[in-house]
Image (cartoon, rainbow, N blue to C red; front, side, top):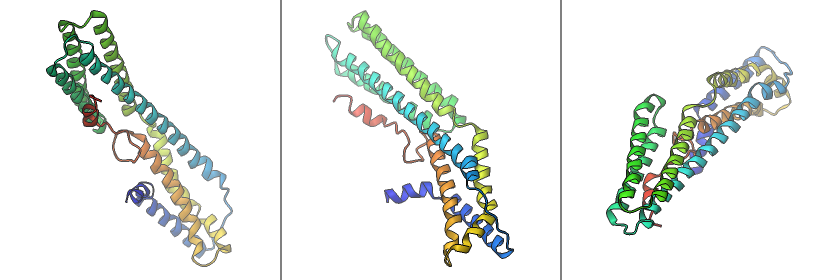
Length: 257
């Protein structure tokens, strides 16, 4: 079932529609005797190269998001270890408090990154509130006997968490240029139809039934690449198979390890 779901994300209704239009264009061209030997380089330069370029950019943003997410988790765990191990007397209430703060922070980050952009302002406020509460917690460690130098180090950990969060927020906020997306969408729809005379030309050398192979393959390749780029575009939306998953509950549960 998992493999079928992955295939469905690449070959979807859009791919079927474009393939049907390409086959219809070929049939019309064969019916009226319209044939031409169009160059395939046009397909590569007009559509495939820009889409592959966009896929590379989207993949780099996903990898950057994973790197910063790992940094937030690492420094959050370091703050927890400081509250647990650096105090002369660490009590259960302190450990439960930092666990709760970490859990709230990661939950609010997940709510921000998985929500639509128009809800960003409200969700962003919750994240900064959680960072503020974590800052006050670190300040309170001084009154529990933590040395000032170690409190300063914890504040540095918190500062790096905020830097990593801001980077993740910009990855979530800024994506592939809208004009490039519109350009790709237009040519993905138009080119398979315009290449009807070419498909009609090469179909003369195919057996009966195989003349549909080329328009279908062209359509599936173009739309499949576009779907891959679309699913990588937002690494937090939990739609594609390769999205960044913020598992707040697992992180908090494994803090004691």
